[in-house]
Image (cartoon, rainbow, N blue to C red; front, side, top):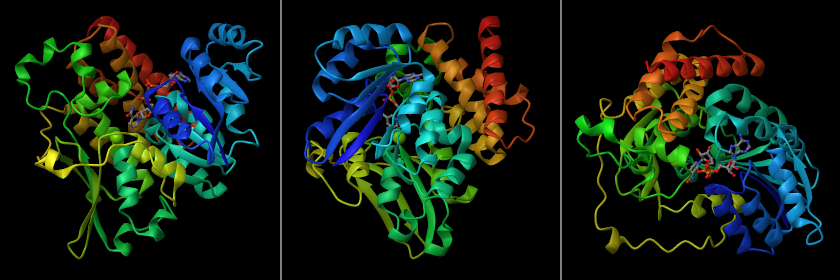
Length: 396
Ligand code: NAD
Ligand code: MG
């Protein structure tokens, strides 16, 4: 029996994780659940899964949850950000599903890594803001790190076992690998007239053609910043050199990414665009379990097509790739700027094309001097958020 702590339990990945756990009560127990402020949804989850502990970051929501659960289940309710870090370290927790959105997920994920837990990583922003420190911590503690992001999970599945066992530390070329091919659908605006980008609404941006996801990652998919963040994530997870990752647009989202070998072979992982597949893979690895996902029907799929990304359509992708090659400081700044810009777009404060403008502005104006500590990176994150907020309040 694996005891699983689901961070971000009320979100899209959290819900899909609990759906897989629900199908295997003999294998997994959700012993910790955490969320930001949705006490209503959390109460339902606690009544069903009866975790030992539930954390609400928002203290008001924690009070509401405790009142709703009183006398019904013995779940202990905790409040605040520090509680996230504390429960990541509980001795009964074997596995952590890191599915908080944004840099807010870093502290708890890193705490679990440092204690050598099995960490299933959906929270890509954690690697974008602290890739090297994060991977060093994995190496030091011997934690098992398994990628949940569908592309990275696909690459993981297509890698030799020796590389899987030493994530972030192998020389890919020495294992006969020439490239990682990171696929992406191109989002909802792949064929939309560029001249009409200023009239894009948040709901249009969140209507992804293939995947159902949280609102922040949905906007990131529309700008392809998501692929940019994934490029950085892949750089750290698989220890790539700049010429070893290629982004490929694949509108059907059937191939979830590929590994190209020096002998000409290309290994791909395919499936329905349903996150329960990579979640089930990471929960059960190296075993396989049912995920509740319909089998892929190739006759229904019909065609698989591929395109090169156009940076005029997806300027955020270009910013992220350049930042990745520039270094850790640049990706930290870009991630923070993007979190603020996307929230402002979702709140109707800026236009869709402004997201790339805010991101570019912050990269240009932040102090990118080398910093090697988490604290230094956290300060840089703060500086970038304030630059982004300044741009937004001035409108330029
Ligand atoms: P979501 O918005 O649906 O859920 C986010 C969860 O995080 C919620 O439970 C929320 O309560 C919690 N949360 C939000 N802000 C928080 C904060 N400040 N402190 C603590 N908890 C907070 O997001 P999602 O789509 O499930 O994505 C979660 C993560 O997984 C993201 O990093 C995303 O990039 C990654 N991811 C998601 C998908 C997907 O299909 N949804 C696919 C690949 C990777
Ligand atoms: Mg992905």
